[in-house]
Image 1 (cartoon, helix red, strand yellow):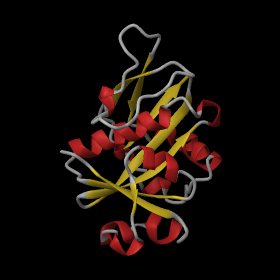
Image 2: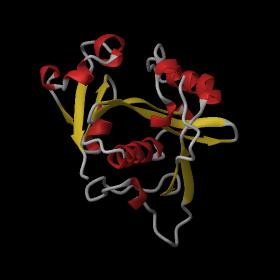
Image 3: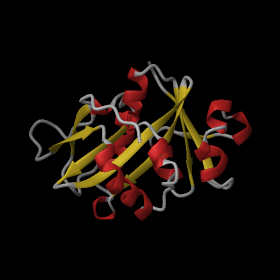
Image 4: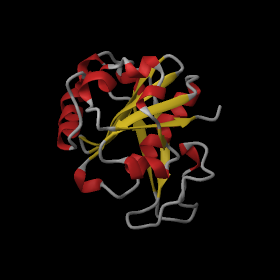
Length: 188
């Protein structure tokens, strides 16, 4: 697995467990997510993983029913994760395809679901994609259409997907034809 060891860290302020999350509407970048200055919110740094994280990432993806077959071929500098006490809590990445990218492998540790970690991660990936000059993100899902819809993603017919996305291994072989294709146009 290729890795860029540059310090790619992004800090987020998330509400405490059980707090109501803000709607994604009107939030342009993940850095705008905040529970307010006087809350008990915790700051969570997301960082790019390196090759030593590969076994834990693979385990988390497998626990979430996500493909791991091509994980070692992906460029980890396009991924973000949050780690605490040596365990990966949330991970996800982008597979660049020209001026677009495929969102890959968004997974949260089962015990931490419902706390806004995946939402913060996706917003951070969007911010990273915008900084890198990408203008549209795509994804394939069998179980998370509602989650991504709430973040502004819309379904797209397979034949309307750009060729670089259609020819990716994830699109062409790893995900079944029954998976929903979704996309989101990014604001510069």
